[in-house]
Length: 340
Ligand SMILES: [Mg+2]
Image (tube, rainbow, N blue to C red; front, side):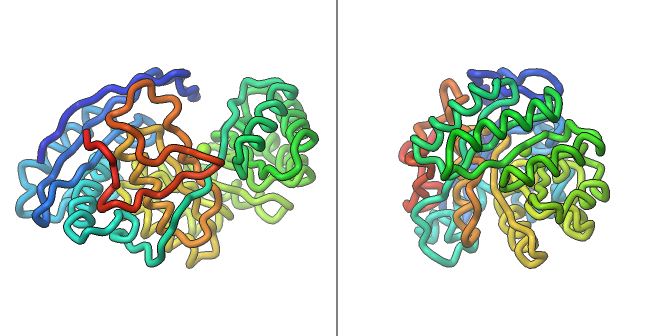
């Protein structure tokens, strides 16, 4: 296994509760397996995955014992998810290339998939008029769905922003992401108001550990989705808690594309809808997430339109967004036109 450190500048920076993220740092991995070289990417995001240093140490340990071990079992599923993601992806890509299959077919996707629909996103800092304008732009650009970030202003102000979107567009699906910002009282008010505005789902209304209280928000006219909670809890635990109607699966956070595909199947078996998104990764991990989404039949629009922030990526994007969707690469493996 070879690993190469990289740094990707983000513009605009990614706003988070812990402050703006101006760059994404990680490791590009190459693994020789099944007679082919596979590409993987480990781009840890502290708070969601292990730290960069822990990831690096895990990759070093894995490299030392790689020849003899099942990498996934050796690393565990959750302690170092970004490291496991990189290794698991590299092995999966090598296997797919050896079989001359696109990655999504090799991961278990059992039918041909041309495109995966994606959502547009508007940040939490826009006025109602600006939010409505972004919605019109998203609808004109062919997006099926807009995600409105909320939670940095009052619930009433955020509801006005969503109402402005509803008044401005008619065909666009709308989902709302609070990134865990609300109290139970705020979430109660928000869910009731947003249900009346035909919002598709409200994502992470409460902090990541409030699974039972999140479950209490279900069945009130709008679906409830969880995202950050999956960085703190196993998918099976969240499903067992009946906490959500939708789970946002981030392969980098779950520990690899194979884990994400299995989690999607677990979701469907539990009557929960899986959606796939990224942690704003480089082209290798982002394209892998597209392949993960392509394995899920009738997947809702996914959060995969995250390439724009990367100022200069690891390689050209084989799967750019066009008309609100991403064309799934059909060449062997990830299907990168140019390998980094
Ligand atoms: Mg989210």
